Length: 129
Image (tube, rainbow, N blue to C red; front, top):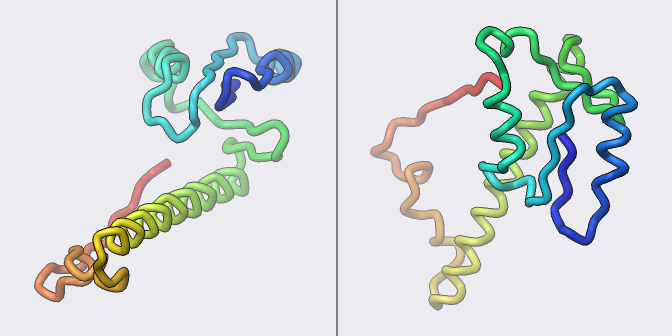
């Protein structure tokens, strides 16, 4: 998957790199990677045939991440944890910003969230990537 965030960036080099690495079909999008839905990514997922999912691995060529190996899967999962952590930090900072803009104490911005409510049971979740 070749992805650039802005139309003024060049995607041809990424496409060529992927083809040189042996990719038969290259999907490419010019959208923010933070978007949940990207047209070519969606097309890629639709192009998978039943049963394909079990044999699919991720190989990030320029970062030596290969999810066909134990180390590659572990690294990929850790990157996911850190990405989720960063998105949560951004959300918290945004809530604090809005609290300040409303003239509230930013420390109170999360006071009413479930994580701070002693009546709400704490839960843990896991995700398989």
